Length: 87
Image 1: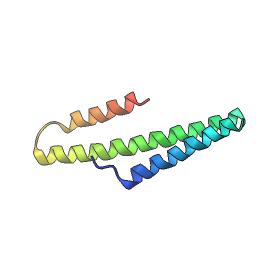
Image 2: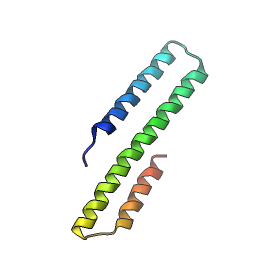
Image 3: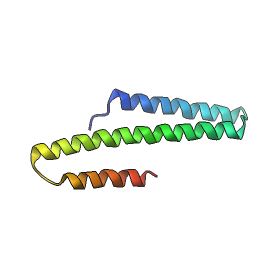
């Protein structure tokens, strides 16, 4: 699996969000503001996860089709299970 620059950039932005949240906590910011930023970071992480799984699924399906082995359905089920576990 190749991790693209887009994937890495998303995680770098999330890292910046997390550092910002820690700063907010250290400065005693309002709980509501901290929770709002934490929710935004979680949403960003969910989107990054979806991107990685989506690209991985695409690559796995392509490989399955080219090799003629296995079931595309099993790969899709595995991807769905990965998403379900992440919740």
